[in-house]
Image (cartoon, rainbow, N blue to C red; front, top):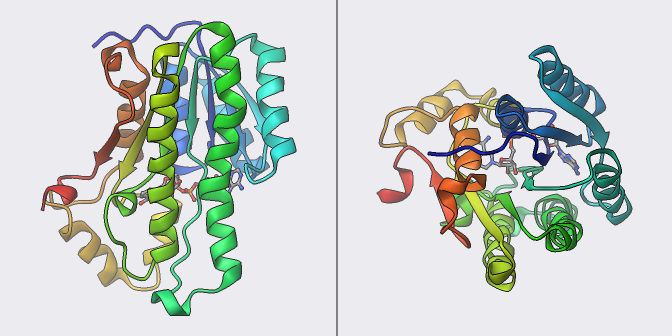
Length: 253
Ligand code: NAD
């Protein structure tokens, strides 16, 4: 597979931890200049420092993806600094386990939808015109297997990730003739802080999580990052509007 990334520019949101950090490191290892965006300054600075310590090019930009002014500024500063935007990985997301549907609260609904749906929409809203102006690009949004099927006790999260796939598919069709590809990755359970927070109270849940994947284990952040790089690469030139499960076979059951 050809990876012709050198000299190109990528923005990664939620890059201060977990999947986003792994993707930022992977982009940088391919020679891209990486804009590390996160709400959390310590995490974001940490990612940028890791990239630079390995000889890569990165800058941290603080951004709350739920705020239009922040997202607009993130994209404008990317252009000011690096002059272009080739790839975007819109990955910032939150998960709240709220029990059965009737037990969820309006605050939980607004929080989850705000980051997971509005955040991805705002990012694409300000990325697509830049990619249009320079003649192309590729966007990958983080959905989830919860966006492909049900997620009991997490119905709002599941709805938010279905919405990410809806935004992805619609944008893919709208911009297909403009050389901009838009895809989604749909991880199953991946070993990140998000996973550890959910399972630390009950270690038996971790065993259960491993067992629901036919491969018999949960996934790694590097495995999601390599799917993101594939979707951005020329190797995926004919792939757009796709929701790629990175799930150890879970959706095949
Ligand atoms: P994580 O909690 O380890 O990292 C998420 C990052 O997003 C953090 O650095 C956090 O500061 C940042 N963030 C949160 N709200 C933000 C906001 N408003 N603006 C900017 N940044 C914000 O989580 P992760 O597991 O790496 O998850 C990344 C993505 O993958 C999320 O969209 C999540 O829904 C999705 N996902 C995760 C799993 C999993 O098992 N970990 C599975 C499927 C999908």
